[in-house]
Length: 373
Image 1 (cartoon, helix red, strand yellow):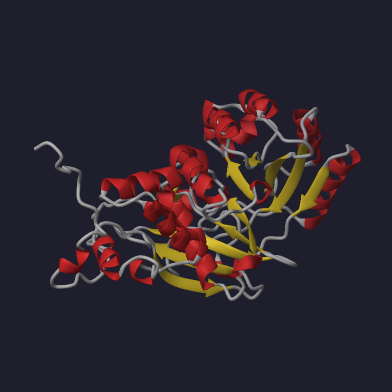
Image 2: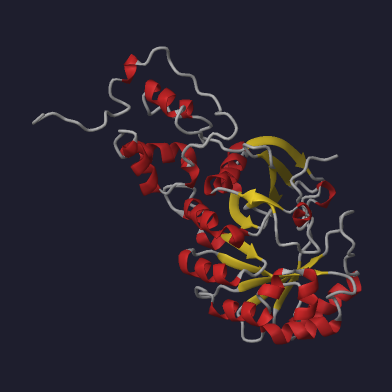
């Protein structure tokens, strides 16, 4: 055996012998192959080497996936044709099936994606003055049970894989006439991102690294209901903006609105916020949904001022988006104005956010993953 090469043959060597040619097709539901959009660059290269391919094939695949928007291996024309056919049997390019798009009167688009086993998730493309923001999901459903959010009413179906999170961005950007105008990504869709932190941190890598989607770290924001241990990991492993869904400045009210507060009450949450590593001139955004007679009184605003004292913070005030499944009501305009004035008098930046996409149930707290009835 001396002198014989016993290494695994490369897939791009001798592939012209494949007979008959293999055709690419979406694998059966339940099929599990490598999640290419969830792999890092070195992992993609290692996967290729595991198939007997040189590492540079992994770099080529990533360019096609993230830079050129390939919809299948057959699009990857810098790879030999027979190799593309072989790879199509080993992995899929698009995990998600885009099943429906609804467009609001204000230009907001809600995109419904179908997962391989049939669950549905939603992403929302929001037009801004000179760019677009994409709100993406990290779970199918949600287990947090917040009283103001429709997503949690059906419970948690499952976590999304890292590639499924990234695929929302890839597919939406691919469909845009001017994809360069998509500059901002927010983890504010279905699910609690930090309840799926392994996949989310991996997805953030491919959203921001220069050999993948290359979004600016300053333009990626993650919103959490307050999972304190995962906040600590996020601050250590990912450089993105942090938004905290706060919605109350006392434990009794927050316990009522957000059951997660019973596990991580405000003293622990605020300690985690104070410890969160903030680059120069960045702040934590605190989201505060204003709900009539629950958290919208002037005393609530003054309590919020005291709670946030000493933090580099800005506050997004969001009038509750009504939904037939919710028993709560939005605050009236005069209370919203008074609440905002208390905050600004105390030198906080407090912006009242006008929700977009309400007419198609695409606004904050309205995503259900269900097609319109």
